[in-house]
Length: 118
Image 1 (cartoon, one colour):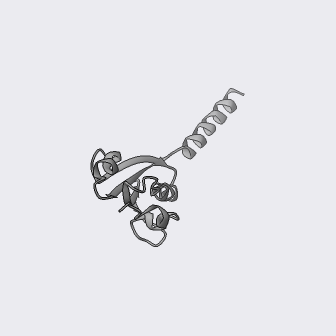
Image 2 (spheres, one colour):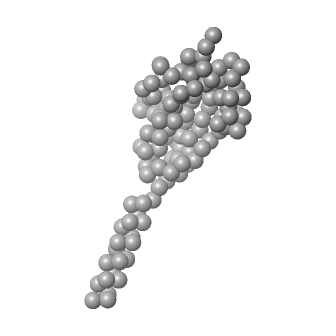
Image 3 (cartoon, helix red, strand yellow):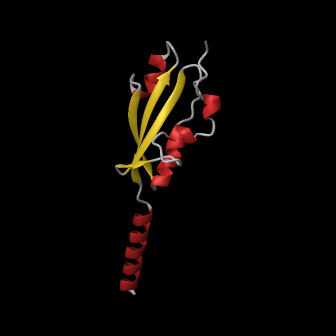
């Protein structure tokens, strides 16, 4: 009876550890600021136009989904546009068309990019 319990425990541990693995998803941000808004726009990258942020993702497809979501821009009068590229466990993750910029797949691109006040 003890062997069965121990064996089942080992199988359960093995199964849960295999399904809980998350890979490394690096999101590479490059922002273009509205004129005069560079300091505020680049603040999220420690004052630089570009930076990389690492998050967990279950797969390359999950990394791709997170890259597209990272394109959201609520600061329309501060950030003119973004380019987001990604790697999953060190390998490039391309958008649906095979390009590096995931913001090309972002559904709200037209309404959230290129709206700096004049």
